[in-house]
Length: 277
Image 1 (cartoon, rainbow, N blue to C red):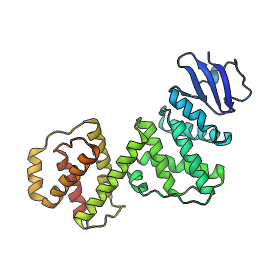
Image 2 (tube, rainbow, N blue to C red):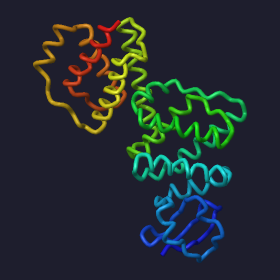
Image 3 (spheres, one colour):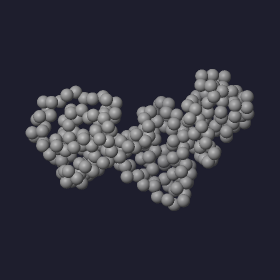
């Protein structure tokens, strides 16, 4: 049985859980009419979110001190929509991270302050499913709150969704997105071109760079490509040299070795881009 210990508001209660001891339960209308000692009905069990981690619980309780109850209810619906779309449970930190982020984003919008996101396009290319859902949810939130959330905010929400889906730290995902943008700047400077962000080759390159960074982080290296490497070095010297420059930047930023085989894949992506101009 799940027993109510304290009702924080209509959507949030602290309870004794048979599997997780003391937990924060979050769900639409979950605390309505409840008092200490009440049992949470079993038919509601599929609807709430359990914050098991003690630090997450304290952060969420602190968040409730400045976020109004109606917004908490909206965010519960918001997060439930994400889980329904991807048919999975999200990392519990999204309840703290995304609620806090969007609360202050809406506050800035209402104050007339601008929200800029220089990495929005790279985020859309790297995480298209998360971005598409973030776009849908922003339209839904605009309607509910009668505001107009700027396009740049969609990218930030998409990163929160990806972080919760992949169980990766949001700060790390942000660093990697910025690193990809830096690598693109280096490519444009060295090849003396301005990349058409609508070009399919650019899309493939950005996704490849994100996957490369993730492989480097996990140590999931690719097979040796020594023979092909020699051919590409001879056939495409400009792009081959640039690929090694990019690899050194990744190695310095990530503080992890980059496999030599990466030069092959990067050279092929760069050559497609270079040839298209």
